[in-house]
Length: 303
Image 1: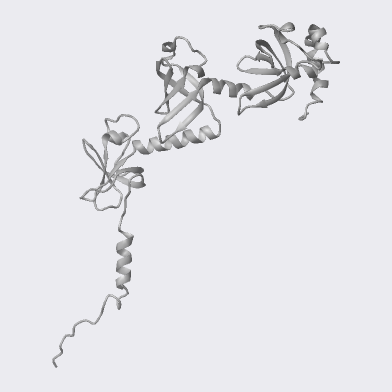
Image 2: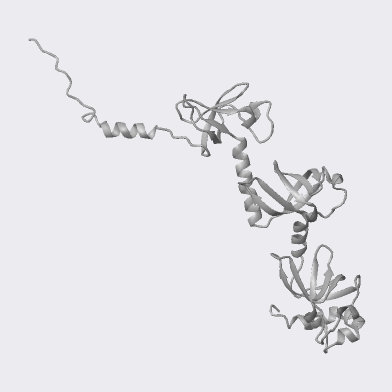
């Protein structure tokens, strides 16, 4: 009995793999890589020029040795161990061979800027190391990035060269990842630390640093407070210079704090037992200021 073999009638559809399934499978493995994209990859090979990374493309991606880390690298195995899975930033899209160029350095820089933006938003202080100076201020190392502190925002404004190598505590004036502009302030950090120790109703002592027609500026150590002329006495004062002098010691009550604007408002008016007492008998008011404070703060809105 002769039996002829028949051609198979099975089609991709009959074995459960339709043309649509095939197209979808191709789509799922059609890797599209774009500049600026963060990808996960496995370190496959080291070379003298860099490392080859498997990211699922047509060919392995490449990391130049100068882009392997934020710092200079001589031994790739210390920052890109073989078979290690790491995140990379695509810095150049696929060439004609389908290879993309990656960077760990640029990714680290990107994440550093994100961290600094968060610190600025939360008004956190940080420590930086002074690397150089010029007429306008000093340059500093900020977690591997280059920052600048203007002379006016330094505690020590003379002999800036002497600050090289020093560690300073600073706050943020400007953080701009797009322009790579990072401007910091030592004065701002000092002020923030001082503000954290102050509160409304607190009795403080300082020295008059400046006399203006509208009030007295009082040096409180690391910051300055203002006693507005209306807060000096319950009586009218024609000329402040007739009653006060620069360098004079004075005690006052904090009546408001605006940390955002760096303002501390003070009052001696509320220490008086009667209008004009401060002007008539300043020594007595100052000597008994601590005892007078308890009664004085009851008149404050937050008391």
